[in-house]
Structures are given as C-alpha cells and as structure tokens.
Length: 345
Ligand code: NAD
Ligand code: UDP
Ligand code: UDP
Image 1: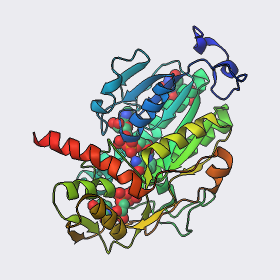
Image 2: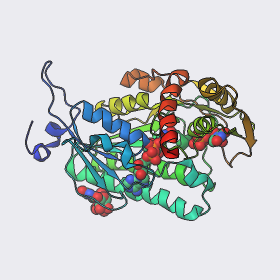
Image 3: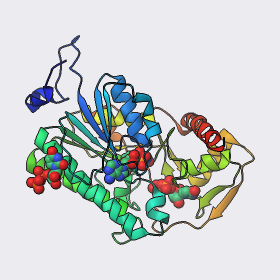
C-alpha cells in the first residue's frame, strides 16, 4: 500500500494508469454517493471485493443501512450520513455519484410535488456541483449515473447516445429528466472548463435484489404484488415497452466505464424489450401462474417505448449484459420473498 497516496499527483493516484503485468495496482479510495441504495450497494460490494476502500455518502432518503450492514466490520468500508447538497471535504481517487431520490413514487405520485421536485433539483444540481467541486479540488475521477429518462418520450428507437431526447420541460416527471440533464451539463462543463476527468452512464431500467419493495417501479410492484397474492397493476393498455437490466450487469458496466479512457455518455441497459403485459406474464411464470392483472390509468407523459442501442458500450467498453429477464427475475424474487416474510413476522 502507498501511504498518503491522496497527496501524490493525480497521474499517480488515478485509476486509469496501467501496471506492468503481474504487479497488482495499489488499492484505490473510492466514494460512492447513494451507496446505501439499490444500485450503489451492489457497486460497493464489487469495489470492496476487488480490494479497494470505499466511503459511502448517503442521507438514507431512499437507501437503507441494511443494504451495506454486511460491510460494517470491514476496515476498508466507511459510511457517512450526509446530504450531498452540503459541501464535503474528502481525499479519494474516484467518485461514483449515484445519490438521487430515484423512486418514481416520489415524483409521479407524491401529493407535495413541489417539495419533491425541489429535492430532485437540489440533489441533481447542487449535489452534482458539490461532487464535481470535490473532484476538481482533489483530482479525482468522477462518474455520473444519468438515466435513459434524458431521452424523454423518444422519437428515435432504439435510443443511441447521439439522440438529444424529447423531454417535456413542464411535465410531472420533468424534475427527474431535467435534473439529470442538468447534471450531465454540469459534468461536461467541469470537464471542459476545469479539466476534471469525467464519465457519464445513461442507465436504463434496472432490477434486482435490494430494490425498494414499495417504490412504485414496475418490476418491484409486480414481484411484490405476485408474492402478496394481489393483482398485478398494469398502467394504461400495458403496450408501452421498457428494457430491463439485471443489477450485476449494470455494476460491471459502471466499473468498466470508470476504468476506461472514455467519457461517454454510454447507454448501460439490456436491449431485451418487453411490453408491460409481457413483463406481467414473465412475473406470473416465475412466481404464480394464477396471478391476475388489474388495469389502472397511466401517469402523464409516460414514455411509450424505451430500448437502448448499446453498440457504443460494446465497442469501446467491451461490455454487454449477460443476464436475461428470465434468469434475473428469480434471483430478485428470492430476496423479495425473504424481505416480505421478515416484514410479516
Ligand atoms: P436508490 O433510491 O435505491 O438509491 C439512491 C440513493 O441515493 C439512496 O440510497 C438515497 O438515500 C441516496 N440519496 C438520495 N438523495 C441523496 C442526497 N441528497 N444525499 C445523499 N444521498 C442521497 O436508487 P437506485 O435505483 O439505486 O439509483 C441509483 C442511481 O442510478 C440514481 O442516480 C438513479 O437516478 C440512477 N438510475 C437508476 C435506474 C434504475 O432503474 N434503478 C435507472 C436510471 C438511473
Ligand atoms: N466543494 C465541496 N468539496 C470540495 C470542493 C468543493 O463540496 O472539496 C463544493 C463547493 O462548496 C462548491 C462546489 O463544490 O459549492 C463547487 O466547487 P468549485 O470549486 O467548482 O466552485 P466554487 O467553490 O469556486 O464556487
Ligand atoms: N407501470 C405499470 N404498473 C406499475 C408500475 C409501473 O404498468 O405498477 C408502468 C409505467 O406506467 C411505465 C412502466 O411500467 O410505463 C415503467 O415504469 P417505472 O416507473 O418502473 O419506470 P420508468 O417509467 O421510469 O421507466
């Protein structure tokens, strides 16, 4: 290990450098904002498993201590309860910036929409600004987890990174879409203006163990409903499409992007495309073939279709998802079944 590595010049401390074959690179110190959340906690597992040190920054808005509790005895792990809207001083090599009030319940259905929308802006704009300011000061590499929502209700299908999107700036979901678009803008401005090493991932719908059970996303809703023997709620006619990626594929993509020489943006998603009715069928096959479907009105501005073009990530990151919906869903069901049982007992 190299003591006080954070005091060394960026070129020595950064992750991108190559080491002679056979020599292990020194462990990195890595911040994961939102690391107590669904995706973040899986990322933390991977980074610790490969020998690096991880500091999680999370305000537990949608994240849970349970997601990272298995690392509490690990001396290479630290958890800080902190809101990224406030400045913070740390010395690290890499920053994975995931913090975001990401659950759709919060922006689509919440009665106090203005407050929630305010939270989105604060986190995506001020939070991202602070993390970029931190990266600039210490010479760390910064990765933003953006979203396929930047494409809005897309007029191009599948979506390539070159597509500029079709976002309603004044709609109910625009606080999320526009918040992330602004975060992307800030990221590129810090890169161009302050020479910060940046990476941008545009994440498509992702599912897996540790997802919030009641956060309103379609996969978690259907799985929890089937396990609780309730009807699966399909919004609208159920013909809208999404592409569902298993969380370990996403985490592999995020790490490949961080370690690469490419800024992005990169689509990270599984190109397998399903209508919501087809998804309901897969959930029925996996959990309970007798489950019923209940149609409910859809929310405003719901994108009609979404499917990533991942040619760029395949070519430049040598990454593509490995786990199909039919393989990934059972792994999530095991976790949900246990958590629903625990909550009942
Ligand atoms: P999540 O809600 O499980 O995780 C987000 C984490 O950020 C939570 O632990 C939450 O407590 C924390 N957080 C929120 N606001 C914060 C703040 N101000 N300060 C500190 N911590 C804060 O959601 P997730 O699905 O794990 O999403 C992770 C990232 O990936 C988000 O940026 C999200 O926008 C992006 N993303 C996810 C998906 C998906 O399908 N899961 C799709 C596209 C983009
Ligand atoms: N910032 C931070 N930690 C740091 C450095 C900066 O949280 O180690 C915050 C800082 O408070 C500021 C933001 O990041 O609000 C942007 O910083 P920058 O230096 O780019 O802008 P300035 O402080 O000059 O406005
Ligand atoms: N949806 C649904 N039933 C639910 C929850 C969501 O049919 O119980 C639909 C929703 O209208 C949307 C799709 O599933 O068309 C994906 O919704 P989600 O909130 O999971 O993700 P996003 O809209 O952000 O892609």
